[in-house]
Image (cartoon, rainbow, N blue to C red; front, side, top):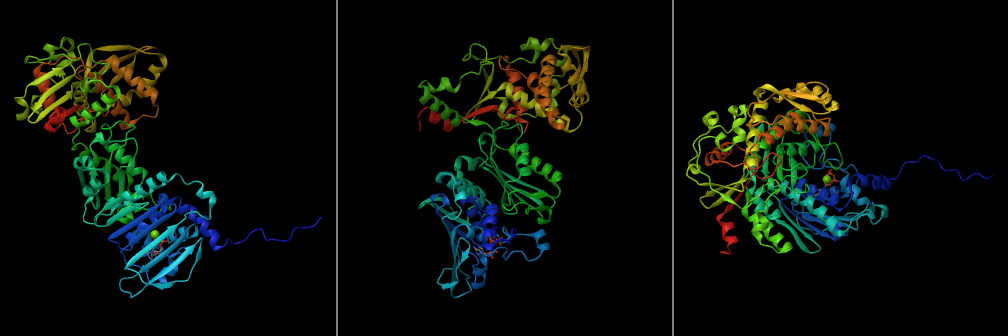
Length: 608
Ligand code: ADP
Ligand code: MG
């Protein structure tokens, strides 16, 4: 037996291999190269940044900036690992203001592509050029150059086939690059961005454009004009930016952008705060559109968690979270939530093309809940009370506390001049039609009433005092044994939402009280809803549970589609809606009103 020639089992990796391995952490795809190079340009104080991409950035990423530039010593160190001009001591990490600081981006990129730098500091007479190919550095040569820096990265992963195979199609890689560039461009007002892909212009923003103007350029005027400004502060922490009306929500999160101290981040806490801020305004699986910048003491936020630096860690997370959710919510409720008639016409004409039927039939297809006579228009005479037109409501003793009862609510309702003279028409016992000065509005009576009731209940809950109406005779509801046990174990929590339920035998629950605000509570339906809610999600607890219970209560106790309303009832409903900040979507995020402005009418009648 011959021994194989002796080789030490453990050896130090060469600098080049180390860099290739490290590269995997920083550089995943062309978009990561784009991010690192543009962030470097921003760190160098650039006011104008040009990015040229070829084949989704795989073949070429070129970034040209007019920033501070580099001298000979700088270019010689730029591709060397852990060489950075931005961080000198560990203590500096606490108040880092630049986007980069690790000094590993260029070293990593240089290890897995063919790169070059051409740079000149404005105060120097000549510039310098250096190349780095697969980690091998050339000598620096003197070269003429404009002030600033031009970095080219060609043939990404040409020497790492395993990684190259993981790259996607050109369109996909380009899409990711563009996403990164859009975020950077929105995070840095005051900087001009010009981007091309395979020679075609892909993004063009002047330095003078503010956030709204940038959104307009990137995503269009429809969105930009509807955005509502956010401006809030909690001590030195400031939140600014723009939020879109809920109807702009989409299937993906590409138009959800968060910036902390100028850095685009994709942090879980922030995304969660945005979701909660829109809670109840959009469907759960839809992603709201918002562009938000947080500026705060760098000592309160650690951006140093991950090499790609999109996750962060906050010192006072709970407090920050509450501040964010409240500020966002306040702004969202100021957005215009009515669905524009134009949108309706669009949907109608799309369907028309698909099904070639009359547009208006399809636009107003009645929902399945609507009873017969869907297109009957009923004009109603004024009548003083709610109960008169609604025999079922009159029978119910709880109705004395009715949310729509004018006597009880009168104090809350300020006169609304615009509404008092407007004729109201109920259509299909479901929609309320109201003339506006330059158009008309259609309100879904159930959706609006539900929203009003829910907001009132939520207000009471927030003040810790949900007013309870005790039932003279408890209402008994038959369920199964497991459900009795389930409700019994949660009874104390439910009581906080004003829902008093107790077991009454093995398979019966007794409802002793419900929130007083419910206009015509339907205990049996509500109990079944709550049981279903708890069975569906066992972990539901605390505020979330109470809110969900109140959702259900508001829904069950509201005017339904199919209920006839008198003119006074309609008026009262609309007036109460007007005093609500967030009357424009129902609790589930469906719109409560659709508005046709003059322009929509003109379009519908081909006047323009
Ligand atoms: P980091 O940004 O973390 O410092 P990089 O590897 O991205 O590390 O860059 C290394 C160094 O190269 C930077 O610290 C900076 O001094 C210099 N540099 C890179 N790009 C530019 C640029 N566009 N303009 C001026 N200097 C640059
Ligand atoms: Mg950098």
